[in-house]
Length: 153
Image (cartoon, rainbow, N blue to C red; front, side, top):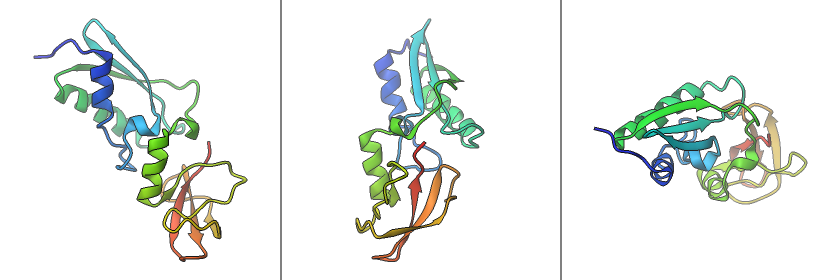
């Protein structure tokens, strides 16, 4: 049996849904949840992928639908492609979670990324492509540890 959801209830559930590629972030932290509405007892959730063709989009939509249904809510999940996602939509809490997880949060491309492990700015770019297309691979020259950096999009 489903219950009539409120927007607050839907947002509360969405804050518990982890990103499939970076599970320390919720989809809300990542900023991909763009719209939440409740119409005729159905939770309608709009999602903006981090980039066109992101392979995790189908998993994200499925995870959102499953979490809402597990909470007893009827859900409709759809794409919102405009405006395109930007790293500016990652919440401040999400940036801190990234840092604690060992990923340098996004910052302007002209800035040298700080190592998320030791904080040193003595870092170097190893590859424009990291573990996912939205990240680049770097190495800290102080502690010698490699790390991903979220590309500023």
